[in-house]
Image 1: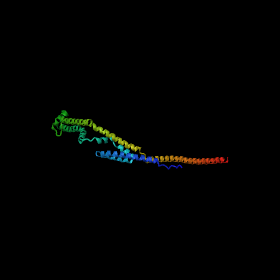
Image 2 (image 1 turned 90 degrees about the vertical axis):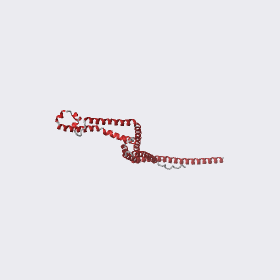
Image 3 (image 1 turned 90 degrees about the horizontal axis):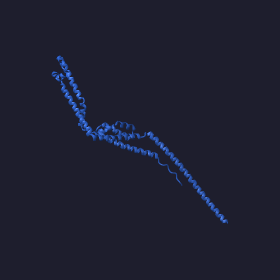
Image 4 (image 1 turned 60 degrees about the vertical axis):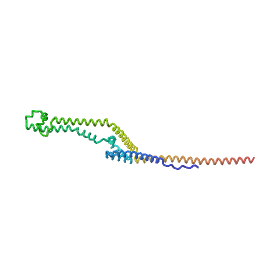
Amino acid sequence: MRQIAPKPAPTAQRAVATATETRAEERGRTAAEIEVLAAESRSTDPAVGTVLTRLADAVRRGDRDEIHGYADAVDARVVAEMLTGKRSWIWGAFEVARNVLVFAPIMVTWFGLSRATDAYSILLTAKPELAAKPFLLLWEQGFEAAPGVVTFSTVAIIDASLIALLILLSLVIHIRADVRDVATRTQALLKESQIRGLLGHATSLATSELPDTEADAILDAMAAEERRIYERAMEREQQLFDMEAAVSELRDAARTLASAAAQMAQRDEAKR
């Protein structure tokens, strides 16, 4: 006799559980990669390292809001340049000096001009007859040896020297950045693409995560559908079982009829 099959294990729950475990493993691997990047960044910029560490923790926990927030706060280009552009302090000092010296000629010019105007005013007060002479001529002559006055030619030489120094520093820095640092820029671009890919993957993991309410609703719907399919299968199983019982009864009846017919045939032969 055919037995009714027992109810199978809830495959929907197993599928959801398997998918959840797979996502958790993927989040763990991604978080580990972000933590490695955070460790590399922490020695150069602790703030970036802290943000990346928190991003890794958010990825491991599957917190979508924090993942998007921390991922948006990370500038892949800045981090890549920070990790690959390890320049010596000398070149950093050169760049600082160039940026500061931009204002030096203006400062020297206005300082010399302020001292010259003060000396010119004092000189004209003492000797009004010198008002007919040009201001630049008196400045070049030092306003008759006035104290603290830098002559016009001296100011011009200082300004020209500062501008020449600026040009030289800019040229050296430009040559080093555009000619000698090609390999460094290539490494920075590769690192930037790697970081962008990692951040994009972390964001995609956050996007693929379903909220608990939605996941529960989907799980309930799948379980209900599974129960419905199981009940239909049980109905078919019961119908087959009933049909087998009916067939068995028909076979017994057929055997009984065959036996009765055989007995009747034997009686007829005996009468003859």
